[in-house]
Image 1 (spheres, one colour):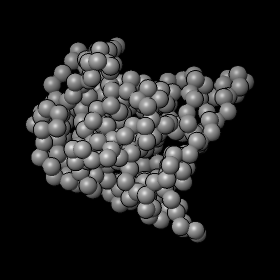
Image 2 (cartoon, helix red, strand yellow):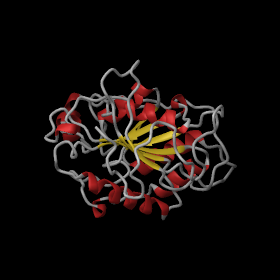
Image 3 (cartoon, rainbow, N blue to C red):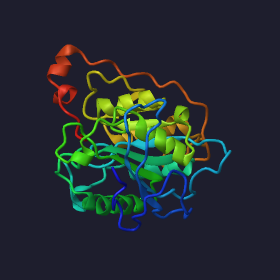
Image 4 (cartoon, helix red, strand yellow):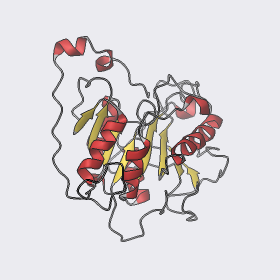
Amino acid sequence: MSGGPLDSETTATMPKREYVRTPGTVRSATSFQGKASQEPEPSRAFVTRTDGPTGPAPTGARRRPAVFLDRDGTLTEPRHYPSRPEDLVLQQGIGPPLHALQHAGFALIVVTNQSGLARGLISEAAIAPMHRRLRELLARHRVQLDGIYLCPHHPDGAVPRFSIACSCRKPAPGMLHRAADDLGCDLSASWMVGDSVCDVDAGRRAGTRTALVGPQPLAGAVPTLYRTTTARALEAIGASEIPRAPGQDPHEEGTGRPPHPRVPHPPVPSASSRRSNPRAEGPSRES
């Protein structure tokens, strides 16, 4: 698979780490090859890098934590194969906790499966406008993504170049590994936030802590924490990571990160609750 015209702002395909550093702007649209030692299948994902407010960590610098975010159903409202910019609507209440985490030094990175590309339901040309829309929506809350990593593959797709078994498609951890390499992130200090079992599994396999969001827990998912909404999950992560002065509002700007506390696992849903919960066995919103 070639890099392709992912983003009209730049169409060059560049190898890893060969880029012009322009903090705060879209810098590259490229593909990547997964780590052969850990991921034997070919792994090539679309990457839109923005470097957030500060750019990637300098060589030799202490690695920073990250919050990896699933897109559809987690960062944005669930839609069935969204294909237009107007299909992307932010989840309620996520702006303040995202801003607090970014201010405290967390990289904010989207990792998204988009098999609609492999299935022929979404065009490559649609991706750049949609992600510009996403960045614009977040900018209204003073939030800037450090990167967007998108897997276009599905082994049963209709578009030959995307119809492969890859190592970037969640629950494989390829996108998280690459983002950590690109942006200098410490996976053990990071979080993966998503609404599906594959999100939780991808984070676990990459070595992050995990947060599951949605109306009910999912059978087969054992996250570090569970909350009913993305905003509540991000607030819980912030409360465990960002020290605050006495009486400080949790949405105010933080000043750093304490040691990682142990967040208890949610209860495993019973068989009766799984039968009454269509999310427990059904397909992920983001496929």
